Image (tube, rainbow, N blue to C red; front, side, top):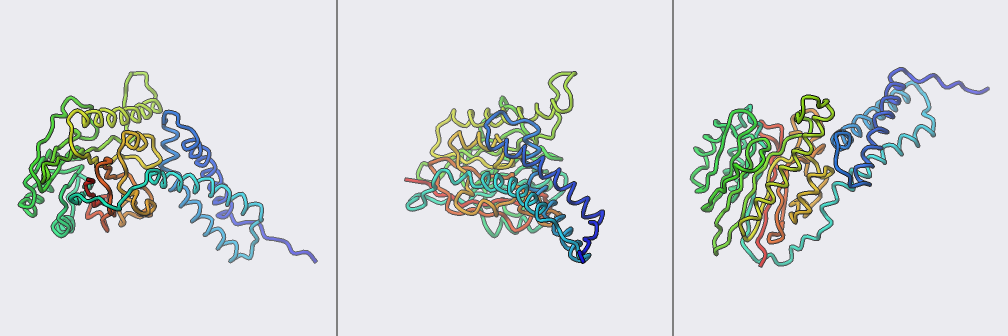
Length: 357
């Protein structure tokens, strides 16, 4: 006597249907972002941002659906399992490929031979104040250079009060909200005029830091606009066109900042900040093509997530949008994220760099 398999529950059917559509759509767009080098558009951006989240949602839904089916003694058809596995792999593979792109250039750490610099970068979520843990972290680690985005006046004053004596260089432009910027350094410095450069979120900073032994490093502090901002070029622009304009503005901003940094010769260049982009976005590749290397190339780039901070109910490894890049004159010895955001929705990132001979 043949057994009759019960019909799947509505929850299982909903998970299967929604998950298949979501992951298949992301897979097509996501693969297009990697297999082509066309100008990035809003569809590719959405695939780049939401594919990891979609992967988490679908895998979680599949697990729950499997548990429901086992509880109700249902059988999941092998064909569905195979199709589901292929869809997940089609997103997982380009995710891993994108994260490993930074390994394309070997990072020789055999004989840096020069002075070492510890660099800290953090987006502090300007509308709120970070907790005292952030000041304690700075005081404990004593980084040589600090690049901050979304620096508000309260946090700037607290940093000056608590650790200001460690940093003769204080190039600060704190503002309420998200536009504040700031650079601290343990060595003398001069800030270049960037008023003629295209603005991101706040004006970019280029600070020349005078190191011992007559060496100079240019520290570039940036905060690019996210592609979901609406940038209107014409009264007739549709919402999709405005979103695409934002991507173009972001890339023009980075291009101008990098060109400006080349006008004055220095021994080394460090670019730090919130790109509002992942390793899978075109703006990241633009920075790399300008000869700058990702400090996380020395370690597992899959464990360098900076957003969201751990106390936000999403996987903390989901997105890495904060970076410390360095030129060929520096070598990355170590890179890691701070253990938490200390009140910000981002986790800070720290890199130990060394000057080459």
